[in-house]
Image 1 (cartoon, rainbow, N blue to C red):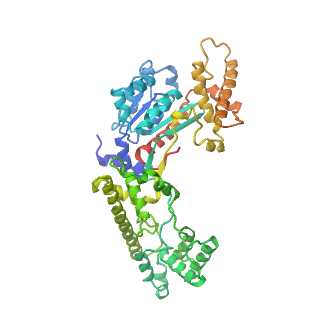
Image 2 (image 1 turned 180 degrees about the vertical axis):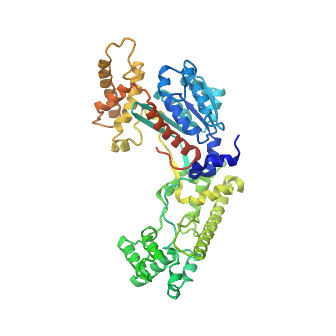
Image 3 (image 1 turned 30 degrees about the vertical axis):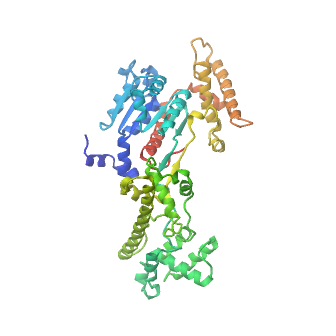
Length: 519
């Protein structure tokens, strides 16, 4: 086993993305993969290499000749053996810290057994996440229903030739470290007491040119806004673009000479910092969610903290602003001035956190929970990312046969509604004919005629589905349906490698609760 130092060196690049907390979550994860196709192997490869804790492959397929041509994780010696066991053995060679096992059972049998008391039910219930690869929709829906009820995230993927789809189903997924770009929060328009005192302590006119060139741009902006308000008699709130342009010009005029870097920084920062404070819409939606009012022993830490944040925002102390993260950007300034400014913002962040903790204690008391129920690390992370909180609730995949997807309008706008309908039509075709479109039967004599016939039938099924979903004039291009038929829903290795990378990326987002997964 590797030491922590060895792991830090090995995983150095990915640790820069999701830090130690994310890596620890990945190493604790238990991923169940239903299916052992090329797509499953490529998805797992991208989870094994970064160090997922454990994976279990469920499938009863045997290694066939076609697998030897498309799946790099089976060998010629594996022909006729369990495909699940073969890919597990070969994948585990890539990272000795990862534990893998095969459950040689048909996916349908596994699902049926998981509904009873037994090892299959225990396995599914203990899964951090479930991946379903290249399985019929009936398998995807059945697993989707089980995972949905248990609030276990599920990622379902399949490909047909050069076309692929990935669907994510999760009832509720909360994200604190979304890494989303946050708006600048330097409080220039409404400086808190300590920042105001610091800005007022600096007399720009009393400084020589050297000292003036090292005044942080935050101070310059506060001075410029104050001067603009005094000259125009206008309020700081509701500034229009022309007003911000005037402030930027005023900053430039305040410079002792053209090209002073800190004054140029201040002028460039006007648009980002000289506007009314707004709580991000994604955060507002979270705080308006009924779950943010919950305070019971079963409420998750995220929602307890969201409840506390809602109360914090409503307090007189907060003045409608989220807790400050304490972070400030790099800027042109001498070391002493920058450190002092940094200290002021960090002190503000600590004060805000203390007020949030007070609100949290009230929430925990109402829930009958001890004060230490939410750890100080969780509070720290929540405060630092209060402006980046995200909540994801997807549509359940087990309802996709009866209702149009919630993002149907988006699919149409992006020109991929026909792709989605054809993937569903492929499964309807399979249920009706017992084979995938384009796959010859034992009595097939004319493959070209079969492809023409299957293309027409597939187009008809897709159009019928689209009409049922409210599309009055559905378009299912003949060449697109023909591609599904041409491929026979076979997996190409290069396409599976790309799609497997995306599956692993989405999986890691869901496991680590970092970054925002695609819906």
